[in-house]
Amino acid sequence: MKIQPAVKKETGHIACWSGAGTILMIVAFAVCHKLFPDAVPFDYKVVLGGVIGAAVSVGNFFIMGLTVQKIASGEQSDEQAYKSMKISYRYRSMAQLLWIVLAMVLPFVNAAAGIIPLFFPSLSIKLINILGIIKAKPNL
Image 1 (cartoon, rainbow, N blue to C red):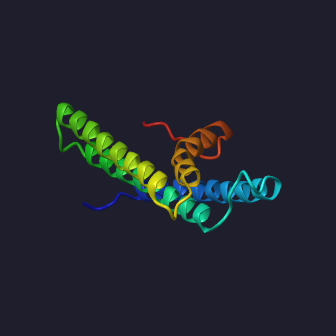
Image 2: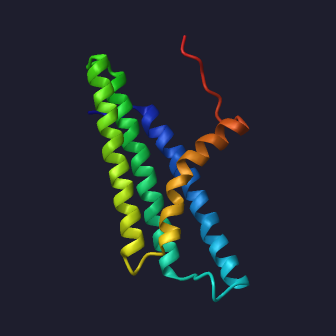
């Protein structure tokens, strides 16, 4: 299956916003560590957790985009399309849950820094719409 330009473009937007969110999160960890060194750790675990968490969230969005692309191609009936989207959602949710568990268990990852980036795609979509950064074109 060839990846549609729209999927590449939107995944790129999400990757940029998630990257920016992850950088802000890392900076917030550093500032909080300076203010409260005993309460907030800041080391390679924070950076590694943030980078992997962002990769998981962007990967999740990309797979969702591929699923929507497949469904939009019209090759499936409505019932099959619904099942495909439901299965995709289930597996993507399981992958994120697996990452959450790994982030909490792995000794070389800060759990909070690994989990927080999972929220960045959703937050960035809301922010983009609120600020009107990307104008949606109506389907004609």
